[in-house]
Amino acid sequence: KAGVTQTPRYLIKTRGQQVTLSCSPISGHRSVSWYQQTPGQGLQFLFEYFSETQRNKGNFPGRFSGRQFSNSRSEMNVSTLELGDSALYLCASSLSGTGSGNTIYFGEGSWLTVV
Amino acid sequence: KNQVEQSPQSLIILEGKNCTLQCNYTVSPFSNLRWYKQDTGRGPVSLTIMTFSENTKSNGRYTATLDADTKQSSLHITASQLSDSASYICVVLLTSGTYKYIFGTGTRLKVLA
Image (tube, rainbow over all chains, first blue to last red; front, side, top):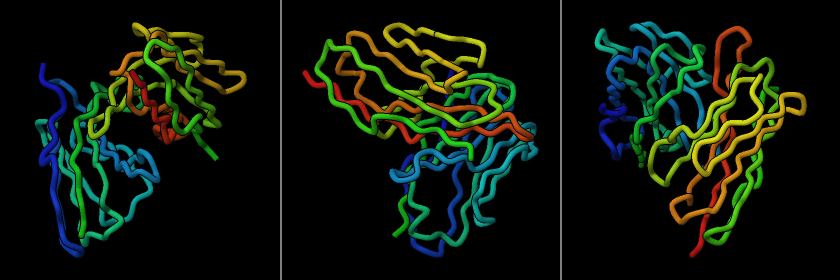
């Protein structure tokens, strides 16, 4: 079956702009989580959605937001981009979510460069 | 503070050799510990998952061990191959209040011919 699909794979934005990233989970998976990965900080948890509800949130400013649709697809949005937002943004899906112990499957990520 | 520390930060070995990566954590309470392999520019791929009651789990040439008393885990790679060159990330699931994954910063492994 198809894996987790993220679009776009690469994008360049200017400081102050906003960006929307998309994630399609594995069919049947109801949980989608988002992560930011930078060379210095490693993987950091942004938020998790389950059945269109945000179930968990990491320590990121309000400029980072997300949502999940009824078909489990998810989007994350970053407003007022800063240079420090340049990173690989990873989406992951699982059957029942973080607390269930299900394996989480990652997408290939969206590379965001802010100039 | 809940943390996951991995060592070494980077490692270079020759093809065919074995190696062991370490993961020490202070996460408590925790539900499970996972090892992921991440190729450069790609998303992480799950290698093993162990609950706190499990001591070892294998996946082909990858064997993970867990000592919940000392809060240490290791990932042993046997007969390394060039394709093992990647970052290996240890992840612990914190189960205090809301569930949360705590990620290590990874060990970057380079296998040379």
